[in-house]
Picture 1 (cartoon, rainbow, N blue to C red):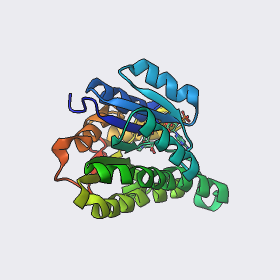
Picture 2 (picture 1 turned 90 degrees about the vertical axis):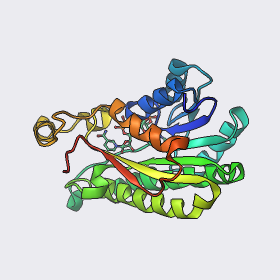
Picture 3 (picture 1 turned 30 degrees about the horizontal axis):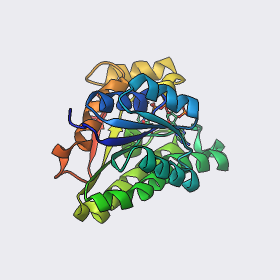
Length: 243
Ligand code: NAP
């Protein structure tokens, strides 16, 4: 019960990796603020979890929406000790065909959304002199991928945010780390061609795609008090795909 009575904010908690993270935190005693774009999606996860979890609708790409989210979380639940920036989208296409709006939306949600949430929670964590921030990046941010120039730029940018925030807030007892999942079975990867999935399964020493549940142990470790001397780092959880 590493998170007993702690307030943990998980963005993108309605589905996939975020939903699984919310459940893992709740199982270790956390009161989880589950964030998604719709009230229905956020509240559905919160009601499945119980244990003081609450659902919040928010578009992380909007600083106004994020400010309103953290004001509500502080009022309803108290100061968050953990923030997991997991909300993310893809708009894949080859670079030469990529429209301005495909670039802008992915950067706005994945990169600016993470910045918006960290900036909104930082003051309260600084006051508490304790905080754990975990950003969900991707192996694509470390290695690139054809057809994902927008997504890989957003995920590589998260590594810059992670290191800079670690340096800015480290003296206040706040750590900021990243987790880079490989290819995880979720709505996001559902549309990938079967040949690509077969390639990943063949290539990864683990011999399978990841599951959302494969990601939570790394995130919960970085979010725990045990990880106090680890900051600005990125843990890859990809079944060995990029060895
Ligand atoms: P997913 O199943 O598509 O779920 C995405 C989540 O993000 C949903 O809860 C969605 O909420 C939320 N979201 C999207 N736009 C948002 C916005 N503007 N504001 C707030 N929430 C928003 O994705 P996933 O596969 O679980 O991925 C989760 C994270 O892991 C993402 O950051 C992704 O880039 C990263 N990742 C995934 C993989 C993979 O293979 N799946 C690999 C590496 C990294 P709604 O339900 O309301 O739309």
